[in-house]
Every structure is written in C-alpha cells, then in structure tokens.
Image 1 (cartoon, rainbow, N blue to C red):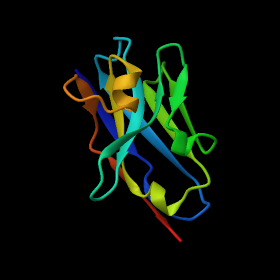
Image 2: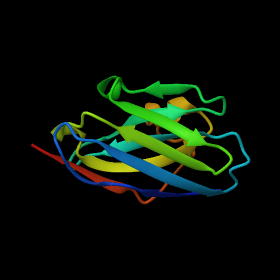
Image 3: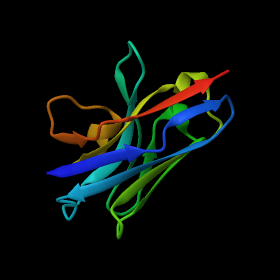
Image 4: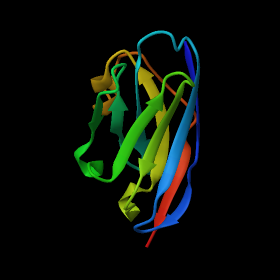
Length: 125
C-alpha cells in the first residue's frame, strides 16, 4: 500500500507556472513507477508524466517541453514543474504510483494503481 498526498495547485494566468508536489508514504520501498495524471471536468483521465526507479522520465505529447517531473527518493517526494500553462491544462491533477509507468501514462484499466486526492489547477486566459 502506498499513500499519496498532493499539494501546490492553484489558479494561474495563461503562460504562468505552477509546481505540484506529492508526498508518498507507506510501502515506498517497492520500486513503483510514479507519475501524474489529470482529469478535466467532463473528460477522461489522461496520463501526464512518469518517472521510474532509475529516474527515466516519460511525458504525454501535450506537455512535452513545458512540464518536468522529478523525484527525491530519499524524501519520498514527487514534483511536477509546469511552465507555459494553457487554459486546456485546467484539471484536477493526481499523483499516482503503479508497478509500470505505462499504466499511469496510458491509464491502463484493470490494473492496480494508487493515487491521491488530487490538487486543482486552473489556468485562465
């Protein structure tokens, strides 16, 4: 079991930046992949970024070059630096952990994933 708590959401103007953080606790000794997914009102969940145990990162095409995922394994924290934000980035953002990064990035159904309560990001024009 892994417990995840997100923070850092808020409202920002188009082109602005936000940094999301996630504190992990519980069985973090297991080599889970960690990442972020988001869900906008009325839309499906979509994977945003992942980072594996070797710090190899993967990003959804729609955030490449704008978002950066990182983690501090010693502190069991995960971060998502979001730059050049657009109104279409408005969503609830969730920190997630899973055995495989593809499960987070592609939101694979029917597999075990852990996620937090989410933090809201609003980007206004």
